[in-house]
Structures are given as structure tokens and as C-alpha cells.
View 1: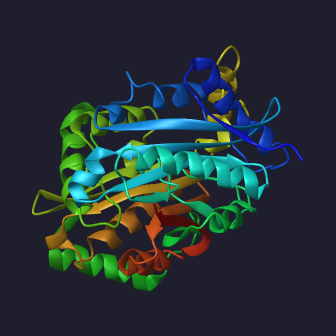
View 2: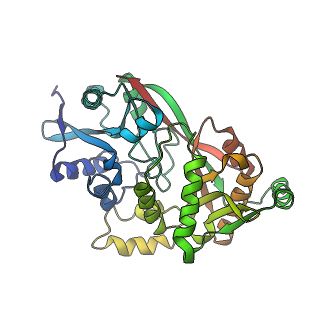
View 3: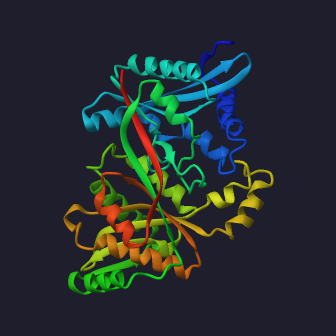
Length: 373
């Protein structure tokens, strides 16, 4: 049996091979959605991705003869380790044929690269930013297609990773919910009570003052998320890059800011599931993909609650319930039918309980793994 050879990617040609591999591995998976090639190129471009100002990464490919059979990316995030006073490295973009030898050699290469940089632990899959790609390997819900900016992985991956010596670090959950639902009367009564007794109001994002409202969201995010497991504060350049990306697809009525006595205390962003359109263009906008994208974008029926941030001193006061309720109401008005709330840490009982208030049902689970080096 031919042995696998691992090679680091150092050229644009090698990156192209890396980008093409998932299409081969998922060719029989009807739920696979190929990411936009232009987004992948930007992500790995050290001049265009602000991550590389405080981090580094190395892609490795596994070959058997001339055939590419696997990939992995080792990531060093210096900002993460400074924030947590830690020495953790990460892996991401793990894709592989069902072969333990190939998997082991890929991880050996990634682990060696991280050890050479003084790191003592490897965790993943966690990419350059959890805001743009959800973390973890899918361990439940393979039969469902991925929503926008969420992962979809093959069912045998967890076994390969565990056989390579990794153990569970954390699970994250995705909830699905019907948008066109009859809202529980108890929830309506709770919302009315919170509105009256705590003076909480919800307003829409103002496109005429885009960067003013974007700054409000960024400031609340930086405070509200700082104690979350695995959080690393993005730089201002990274945050602005995320905002510019979301600007292309956000919906005014579904980008909401919660206020108490006129002061912002929280926000919720729900995005249209653009994956429903992307699956028709095979990752390429040109020459004809852009026309297909515009056509299918008009037929999108799904929404994903992408993010929620509430200042710590205003939690447990009903702000989250107000945001969920008003997002659901506006989604109904706009004619959407299906929804996903993700990703949610398995330890975040407040959000899990709130998801159930709007008939959220856990239907996907992702696992983040770790291993000492």
C-alpha cells in the first residue's frame, strides 16, 4: 500500500489544489455548499487578511502518488495567546479521505509546525475567526445543509481525529426553528411585560448612519463576548473587515439594537441564508455565477441568527427575549419560513433556554477537540 507524503503549501498553485480538494471529497454529499473562491483567496492572502498582522498559518497537503488525499492548516494566533496568557495553537480546514495513516501524518506535520513556535497545545477546528466560520466538526445533523457561515463536515471525521489522540474540548449547538410559527402566548405576554416594566425598546439598524450603528455593535460585542470560552478580541481592522462583509447581505429589519432609556445595551443580527443561492454556483461568481446568485437570492427562505450581544449588567432582564421575539416577527413579515440559531456554546444555558422559547430544537452539534503537544 502506497504511503502518504505530506507537503507544505508555499505557492498559489498549491493553494489552488488545496481549495479544490473539498469538492472531490464531498462530490456525493448533496448538502455540501462550496464557499466562494474569492473569499478563500482573500482569507489566505497575507496582504489582505488582517489576521496575519498578529498570526501565522501553514497549509499542508497529503499526497498518495499524484493524488491529493488530505489537507490541514496549522494556525498560530499570537493575539489569542496574549489575551489568555496561553500557548495554544489551532488547526482548521481538515479534510481527508477515510484513512487513519493520512490523518496521523497531517496532524504530525501541523503539530510539529506549532511546537517549533513554542506552542504546547493544539485545538480545533478553529479558523482565523469564529465570526466568519463556525468552529468544530459536525457530530450530529449531517443530513441537513449548512446555513451561512457554518461548517459542514463528513461523518467519519470525528473518528479520525479521536484516533489521532484528540479529546473533546467543547461542543457548540445549532437550533432550528420555524419562522412562520404561532408564537406562544406566554412569550408575547413576557415581551409586553418586559417592555413596560423595564423600558426596553428595539430599533432597526440605520443604513443612513451605517458606521455609527456599526460602532455601537462593535463596542457592545467587545464587552459582551470577552468572557466567552475561546474568545479572542478581534482587532479594529478585523472587525471593520467583518462589518464590510456583512454590509453586502444584512437586512435592516433583522439587524436590531436594544435600548433602555435610549441607551444601547444589546444587539441581534439575523442574516439571510445565502447558502441557498451559493449552492447553485459552485464557488465561482464569474462568468455566469453572479447571474445565478442574483436569481437564487430572491428565493431564499432561511434565516440564521448570526450573533447576539448584551452588556453584562443588562443580562437576565429580558433583552435577549425582546431581540429573539422581534427578529422572529420581522422574519415573518418578510416571508421567511426556516430559521437557525447558531452557534451556541453547550454551557450557555441562558441562550439555550431562550432558544426554546421560540420553539428552537437542537438539530446540529459540532465538537471542538484538543490535544497536548
